[in-house]
Length: 110
Length: 114
Image 1 (cartoon, each protein chain N blue to C red):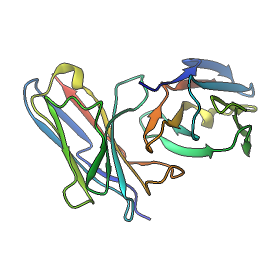
Image 2 (cartoon, each protein chain N blue to C red; image 1 turned 30 degrees about the horizontal axis):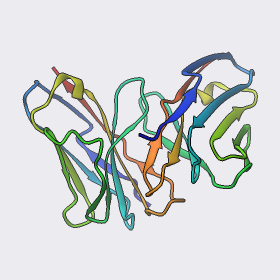
Image 3 (cartoon, rainbow over the protein chains, first blue to last red; image 1 turned 180 degrees about the vertical axis):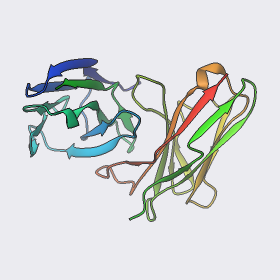
């Protein structure tokens, strides 16, 4: 079935370093959403990208949707300890069915 | 607005027992989802309702799992009989149901099967 592949599986960074996670699909996506899950918490919606080549920013977070609408990335500039958690991409595979990637777990060392 | 409500928060049962989880979505949200999240993995969609109809249940193990949303509002997910591999967090989410609507998740029910 439809899958979205997310890499890396986890990443350790020193506070202040940048972080990027990538999401890839073999098929064209209607849209892509990004969620953050803090340890012990539930996924919380961050943003949605709909248009080809779209770029959106939220403070230190930059989200991109590929030109072919098959991949996306989330970049965090100058990580902080509050950025710790797992970042998931989620894609609408058609029929309003939302499939989640496996997530990238971010560890930030102070 | 009030968030998605789920209960219980935690549940420990022995294998072959049955268990039920309850979810009350955000008011006005037509679509309700049940996801299973095994430790270290992403949420896996079990079943999706649009109002009180099933949109997708292709990943639901129907020999042991069942779900209903009789009045198009709250929902119940049942497992009978439970297996060890059912140990996971069961997340309920809701949305307005169009393709651009984000999902709002409840706090989940952490199930441990011993």
